[in-house]
Image 1 (spheres, rainbow, N blue to C red):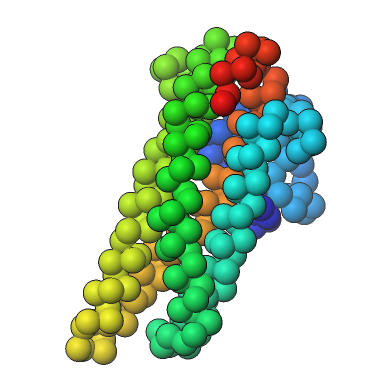
Image 2 (image 1 turned 180 degrees about the horizontal axis):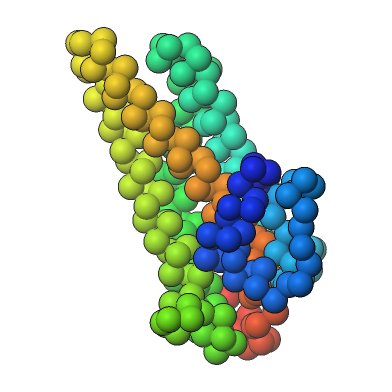
Length: 219
């Protein structure tokens, strides 16, 4: 997924996973010519065709979710432009997102959390790719934490939409809908970055660090 160019330098310095990916690179990137999306220079990219089938499946699921996420983004932006008035297009974009998140995302996250992440977490620690202050903390901890926070944020948006529709006072309804919108935008931004980090940092690390025996455990 594309990441806003203006976020590049800030996140390169502040994001713990992206910062780690750049730590061994001597190449300087001009702020006048930022890339379209992050390119973790110290980690060699792995083409989809060369990924293990387990990782390919995760990437395929990311693409499906990204399509739904993009439609959700269009829907809530139009909803705001429409002054919090719903129409068929907006309703369909919101419904598709909530249904997909409820039915598909938990299964995807379980594949990562139960199968891939524990093995990769250990490999990252063994290879020295961990928090400098606490060697038990790796990028996996952040990704699992984001799974939880995103799920919580989605629940908040869903509940705010329901609450707003029941409020008789227009001002209170607008405040509630604005809060739902803000939380929705945060979900979109977080998910785009989350998917980027998995596909461009964690999955290449998996291909680099896993042995044949490790890959046999991915089923």
